[in-house]
Structures are given as structure tokens and as C-alpha cells.
Image 1 (cartoon, rainbow over the protein chains, first blue to last red):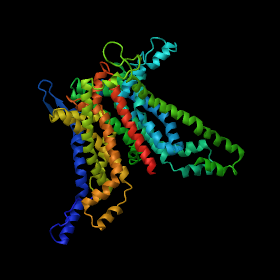
Image 2: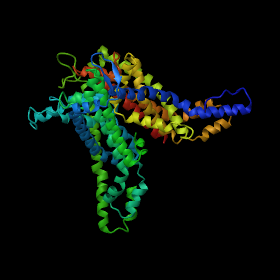
Image 3: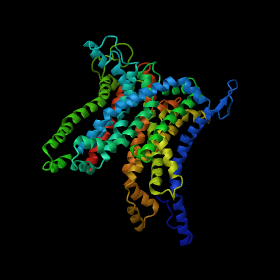
Image 4: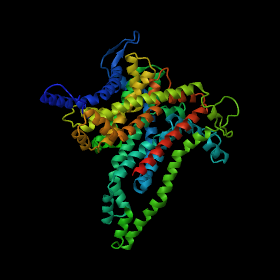
Length: 304
Length: 288
């Protein structure tokens, strides 16, 4: 879009044209300035501040902090909270694998057999997003609770012992994570499968490949970038999640997100919280970097 | 597509080749649909529970959602505004969502136009902006929330509605930009040139040609921002301070006991959202 020019602009025709060209050259910068500034001040600067908090050394007595470029906080927090990192890794990893297994067949079905109802099925896939994340998790607390629908039924029919419980265990957290992030997994896989050129699939059949061979050697390789994108888009938010753990997991099995939240909001230990956040961000970026190295940097953006 | 290929191939294929191609067809006709409907049932199940519990009677004690089913009542719908903190939190969320959606949609759309229109040669820093957008979407939300809290504490801004707006726009812009850019990619610039040739100035060209054409993309981006803002808990929890949005209030209340009105709000928001989605689906189908 060009900048508006007054219709009767003073000056010679030549000057006018030069002015318009100057403005046109400026246009991309003018257009991107407001958003760019907002992102700079409220996304990049905060990240820089967070990094600088961890690199400073504070005097515990006076509270004054000086920049010492000390990276010692990182090994310190990692050794302090490595158990929570491992728990997050296991919970988020298990939830992501479950989601990949659940969503591949349904994404495949919608992409290849959805027909005219494709968009309807996509809305059904996104249906959890129409309910607030917190409420969704609360409802799972109700469902999985000791007197809740599922356990009440199982206990009533003596299918599980009376003392059996799910809430407050890692299984409840994994179940909550898997439910809450399922659409993040299913959509990228669907996009990848949907994008496969049907001519290529038909060509495989014409060349006497049977269904299994076509699936394994044509469809799967083309779906791999989508599966990997689905893995990252599910694993990264699940890894930093603390809502599922706090509502469904009780006080045990603390995840790293819970630690960060408590350090910031309860203990006011900004240095510790900031270093853990930087580590969390670094782990996420590592995953994305791996994706970019293996599958090309442009492709992941197509799944956002 | 697959049926035609089988029909073409049957005459030349040996009989043994037909079996494997027929079996997966049953997979597509029976196994996969059944499985998919089961997954959809799994996705809908907690929502059905939420709707059901919004009608659950409370027989004794405090007016909190109980695990046991005590009978049907419309009491919570009639008394939807009886929980003072909840109602004000809800209206705060609506105000916040509207303000941050308007800001982030305008900013994100302008940025998307700049990214689609101008090549790297004419737009230095384009690659950097694209990487920042990507980083913004990919970063774990807790990192964004925590870093914003660090900023507000460092520059000493009191946490409240202002910081919520600043934060919500900060995490919505990238989503709006990506959504609008995707819809803008197939934009036909010759229509704008035609407007110029017919004597329209750039402003009226934008208002009367460009904007109507990109409107579906802008609306999609705005809906995205609206949904993100209404649903946001993690970032809001860091930067909300004294003004508490709906998800933060619900989370805080749930640690002591959930008032049934929470599920009433949840049910109504769900119904409105799904009605909009199905309506837009119907419109787009009619158009095509």
C-alpha cells in the first residue's frame, strides 16, 4: 500500500514524482513500524532484560545488582531443578507421543476421505478451543476425581479397587496435557496430508504399488515435515505448561513451568526464574533449530 | 481419487494384486470413520460434562460445583451474575479482548501488507522481522509472560489493565500477521492498478479496493486475536496484578471451590463460539 498523496500536491511534476518515489521507498518501513516497535519493546527487550537479570550478580545485603556476565546461575538452577526438567520431559514427551498416535489416523481420514465435510470435521477437531483452557482442565479434574464420572462407575462395578485414584498422579497430568494440546498435533499433520498432490498417489498406484507400499513410501515421507512440526508445536507448549500439573497433578510431580511461576510470583526470585526461563527457551529453540537443519527453515512456518 | 485408479488398474492387474487394495478400502469406509468419530467424541466429552454440570443442583453447603449429580436446575443460569468477582472478571476479559484485538489487528495487518508487498531488496530487515514473528509464536508462553513481568518490574509500571493490553497485543500481533499474510499471498495487484488508472488516489484505492479484498483475511486474523485474548491464562497471570481477567479469576477460585456460574459462562461462550464457527462454515459453503 502506498502512502496517501494529496491530489493537488504543490511543486513541479518532476518534484512530485520524486517525492512519491521517496514515499514509496519508505512505505514498507512506515507500515511495519508500529508492529515492529511493539514487538521490539514488549517482546525482544523483555527477553534481553531477562537474560541480563541472570547474568548480573546481586549483593544480598544491599540488593544492588551489577552486570558481571556470570553464567554461573545456569548450572546452579539446572542442578537445583533437574528433577523437574526430567519430569516435564517425560510428561510432555508422553503426551506428545499419545497425541501423535491419536491424531494421525483422524487427520489422514479428514484429508483423504473428508470430502465436502472437511471443514466441519476440522471444526470438530478444534472444538476444545471453544472452551477456556482453564475450564477444560477443571472439567478433567471433575472427570478424573475420586467420585467423578469415570472412577465412580469403575468402582461401583468393582473394576478397580476402592482406593484407586488418578488425580494427583502423573497419569492425570499426561491425560490433561494430551487432551489440551491434541488440536496442535492434529492440525499440522492434517495440513501436510492435505497438501500431498493426489496425482503423486495415483501415480504410485499406476506403477503397481499396493496401498501399504504407497502409504509407507509416498504418503509417509511427504507427511514427515508435518509430523515433526506437530511434535514441536505440541511438545514446546506442553513442556512449559504448569496449569495441567497444578490442577491435575496435585503437589507431587512438579514440572518446570510450576517452578518458574512460583519463583516469579511467590518467591520473587527473579534471577532464578529468569535463568530457568532462558533454559526453557533455549531447549525450545534447539528443537526448532534441529527442525530447520533437517527439513529446511522455511517449512515449519507453513504449519503455524 | 482412489476409486478411479482402481477402476483403471483392474483389467491389467493380476487377481492377487486386488486383495490388498480392497482391504484398506474397508479401512477407509469403516475403521477410520469409526475411529475418527470416537476421537471427536473424546474431544467433545469434557465439554458435554461442563454443560451438564452447569445444570447441576447444589443440595447443601456452599454454592460450589459438586462432583455428584444432584438433579437438574436452571438456578445458575438465572443467577448468572450472582458471583461478584466472576462477573467483573468476565467484563474485564471482554473489554481487554476488544481493545487488544483492535490494536493487534491494525498493527498486524499493516505489517502483513509490508511483508507481502515488498521484497528483501526494498525492505531491509524483512528477514529479521520474520524471524522475530516466528520466535514469538514458537516461544513457550511462560517465557513470554515471565519476561514481560520482568520488564514491568524493571521499568516500574503498575500491573493492571494497561499491562494486560500491552501483553495481549504483544502475543497476538504475530498470529494476526501470519494469518493475514497467508490470505494476502494470492492478492491480485492489477485490481489496484486499475483503480489508479481510473484516477483513484492511494487512500481511496486502499479503502475501496484493497481493504474489501483483504477483509476476509483481516477478519480471520481478528478472530484469532480475539480467541487468544479471551482464553489467555499464562501471560495474564503474570501481568494482571489487581485487575483479574476471567481465566485468572476462575483458576484462583477453583483452588478453593468452583462456583457453578463458571460453567454457565463456559457453556455460553462455547455456544456463541461454535454458532459463529458453524455459521461462517455455512456461509462459505453457500458462496462456493
